[in-house]
Structure formats: C-alpha cells, structure tokens
Image (cartoon, rainbow, N blue to C red; front, side, top):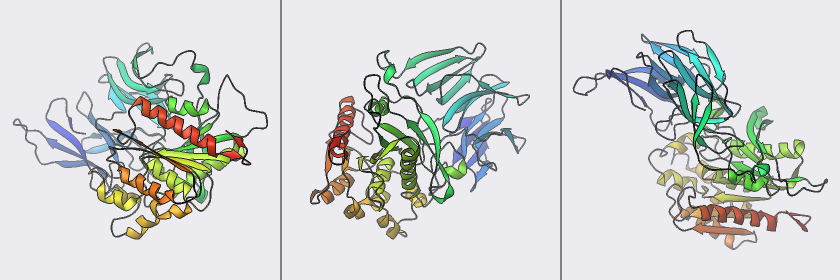
Length: 465
C-alpha cells in the first residue's frame, strides 16, 4: 500500500513478515523521497507484533492517517502527528478489512476538513463523516449495508454498495444533499423476482467454550408455495472461504436460489472471521478445522432450537477454505449434517502447505502449525485421512484449472469413496479455476447440488425435499 504525501516528499508503505499475514501483524514505514526518486532511511511509524494496520493515506494537509487495532482490539482510525500517534475515532467497530487484494479503501478525504469512512458492526456496514478539525463524527444515511472501496473528493463519495435486497453497485453520494445515485449495478433485479428475495437477519449464537459466534440467517421465502403447517425447515449452512474473511450481506442470487426453493440458509461468520474485532479475528490461530466446524454445527443446532429447522435435513456447503470446513464437518464424530457439498475444498493440508502460492505460502503455519514440524497435526486434520468417517452423502464440484486447490485433492476424496457404500457425486468443470466463472457452470452446479439433496435428504426414508 505505497502512498506518496501530497508534496511528493514522503512515502508511506506497509510490510509484514511470514508466517504472519497482514491482518495479524503489520508495520508502517515512512521515508523521505529525494529529488532523484531515491528513498532516505526509513523509520517505522507504527506496528509491531500486537498490531495490524490497514490503508495508510495522507490527508490533504500532509498528515498520515491509517487504520490500527492497537490497544482497543478494533480496527479504528488513527493518525501520526509530530511522531506521536493519536486516535481519530474510537469505536467498537472495524474500519479495516483483511488485505487479500491491493488498493482496498474504507475511507477518503472529501476535503481538507472532512473525512468520509465506512465501518462494520455486527456484520452491517455503515457510512460516516468526521470533521477533522473538531473530531465530530456523524453517521451518513444510506440504504446500503455492505460498503467497500470508498473514494471521496469534491463534495461527494463513491463506493461499492449492496444490501440484502440490492446487488453490488457503484454508488455516488452527494454529501451536501445526501442523494444517492447508482452509477452502475452488477445485476438488475426485476419486479417479478423481488417477491422471492429473502432478507438476512444478523444473529449471534452460543458456541463451544462459552463463546459467541455470528451468522446471517435467510429464511425460506416464496410467494408461490407454502409449506405444510407442521413442516420443519430444511437448512443449508454455508461456510465462507478465506478462512480470514467474512460472510457478505449483499444480495446474492446464489443464496436466493436456495431460499426460493424452501431452504433456510445460514451464512456463518465462524470464529476467525473479520468484522468483530482482533480477538475474534485471531481465534483460528492453530485452530482451523476445529472452531470453524464447531461454529457451523452450533449454528445449525441453534436454528433447530429457535427457527424451526429440521434436525434431519441439515446440509453444509462451502468453497475453498469453506470446502475444507465442510469436509471436516462431514467427517466429524458427531453427525450434525446429513449431507454436504464441497466446492474445490481442501482435503490434504500437507499438500496445500507444499504447493500453495507465495502470498499464502506460510498461512498454514499460523492456522495449523509450522510444516513439516507439525506434520502429525496436518495429517490429523486432513479429511483425506478420515474417509472412513465419511458416512453421509457428499457432492464434489471442481474446476480442471484450479491452482489454489488442485483437482487431485478432490480426486483423492472421490477415489477413496468409490468403493464404499456412501452416496456421492463428482462434477469436474473443464476450464474452471478457483471459483467458477462461467454462468452455465454456476447454474449446473447449483442444480446438481439441489438434486443431490432432494434425492438423498429424506424424512423417514419416504419424503423428499
């Protein structure tokens, strides 16, 4: 995240050292820029082993701002003044995100006196404005609840916005009038579709160790069909990828696919997800494949107790890291789920540690333990070594050109199940990578997953979904 000061005289940037990732430990550096473009001796402006930083940015008057979770444990706005770090706004909310991509932005300067920012609390994103001179903060009204890539200037702010009823769009907001304008939407939702849109409810539920986990719950909804009054709800539990990421609250037609067909859907922000403070974000340290699995199971049981979910028709699905959580849940001793779907899920942790790309090359050291020193732990938590415990139906969906989780990982699971009396299906999509991109393949995979559940999730062996 290199950033030049307004006068071009200073450069700020972030660094981190493996095995830590940028959302665990980060350092902020500043150096003078000479006339020939060379850098002077850098000094560390912030950071250290207990601090993760996000988005260094210079204000119009040359002060260095950034997001830090030092002290409070929340990613809050700070600034450097005369070598001293001062908080800009302290709040139990997150103004940062995990830096999986370049050039992420949660705030910007609309003028010399005004900063516009977005922050997340309890899974919901909001917009706010800060008067730089007085430090006064006020929320900016917006209908969007999932906001990212904030850019400001000239009395307006532009961002990517979405909500439970609207797909992601480029949005322009006039700060003087408060009027929002959708510049371009990623999809158009017709009036015929809107009655089928199930809106998410942010929920918190008890999990293991006396802790609390978070999720979005989408109840089934269809204006065309109604379940019998005595019908309990079949539920699909989704585990997001990353795993250091978060469930999104933007309208997803892939989610609505399920709710419009009679499923409730629970999108779990298991411990280790972002948006709930540093402590929650770091809970998966050496615990991946344990806490995330427990939270998905506890979330499903919470719905059985409080949302009329059918304990005999609980399924779990996830992609990439979420696929790993799915396979771990399906091979767990306690069979909470009756079926599952793994989209390019990790099955062999040791192979992933050896073969993955540079950015994540030491990520598993933090999630599992140093490899090969902790090779035994890698083996214990790899689903490929517990195929004998996989006793419920599972469908595998994989792309042939996936470099993140190569097809051979899925193939090993399929080969291990082929000679066992466990129903399974395997779809290998030619030309697809780590995350399906072709519309026909996305539709085919959803239809296949639905058919798989409908054929195998029965009540008393007689009644299909």
